[in-house]
Amino acid sequence: MFRPLFVFIGTRYTRAKRRSHFVSFISLTSMIGLALGVLVMILVLSVMNGFDHEMRTRVLGMVPHATIESPTPLPDWRELADGAMKHPQVLAAAPFSQMQGLLSNDGKVQKVLINAVDPQEEGKVSIIGDFFRQGRLEDLAAGEFGMVIGDKAAAKLGVTLGDKVTFVAPEVTVTPAGMFPRLKRFTVVGIFHVGAGEIDGHLALAHVQDLGRLQRWPAGQVQGVRLKFADLFQAPRTAWELAQTLGKGDYYARDWTRTHGNLYQAIRMEKAIIGLLLLLIVAVAAFNIISTLVMVVTDKKGDIAILRTLGSTPGQIMAIFMVQGTVIGVFGTAIGALLGIWAALNVSAGVAALEGLLGIKFLSADVYFIDYLPSQLMWADVLLVCGAALVLSFLATLYPAWRAARTQPAEALRYE
View (cartoon, rainbow, N blue to C red):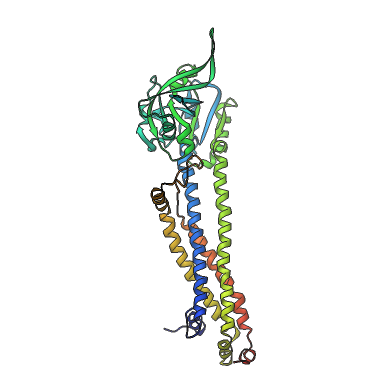
């Protein structure tokens, strides 16, 4: 099969030939360095994508995308929900109340945020039903003062299904005997595990009517309406618009950016910064090709001079070394991409197996918002990384190839 002369010679220079074994060796090291840079960049970006995905689906699937609330309890939440559902961005609405306090059992205390829900409506706006380890959301019955808690809170309090816990509200009741904290006994009817330490340790669910009775509201009244949006990034603006149009100033809106927005933005910013830093690593590996080709040009000055005397043009000489550098870049990028894809697809299982083998938890839910290492491979990232590596590799060939093209045959052969 016909190949241009510069392609034939350029590919030959990437392999050992007679006494020039070191040329092959430095070409191999350049290829390995580029492959490692591409591998690490694909792997780390996939892990950052995994954190981003888990933040969206798990944490933001549990907390409200937005709520529309009133300074006073709402007597008819369905009217407000029906009005909000007319907006095309709103997928579902459910009644919503919150109360902070402490849970205690046998001398153990845990702070908690109680989300009061309607079990029949909550599944429309939350993914909590997918994470139950014991019990069901439907086990929350009005008037029975049942409670669903996370597994971390259950472990800290030492309770399981059917046990009693005492909720201490941040209010006091004034009696002739003095002031006493408001207490209420709840029965644990469900335990869930989301994998997010903040949620598993500090979130509890109760029936909306039970919390209304605890807050001494008339039957049927709630704090507000929880909304689920088709695009959660539209939640801040859309929730504010709904609060203004539906309540004429009587309602106010809260959205997920106030509770978890900083964490989400931190993940996005870290991905961008880490991606830039890793791109510099790829750039260092790619520009290592410069030193490789400079040494090759120095070693092959005699060959270059002979080719020039046989009629090769400077452009052809330049193309020879551009081909060699490009071959190194293509093979290094391809090997790194394949290994990076394999690593990104298996890193979660690999880390979990290593944790089980060593008995060490690398990601603690007490520190991070999830307790496992996620990974999500995105082909757009793979193409971006490979494209950047190939471009940098090609640019790295220009200077050494230009130097080779300027070689003067008489000077190169003077001491041969």
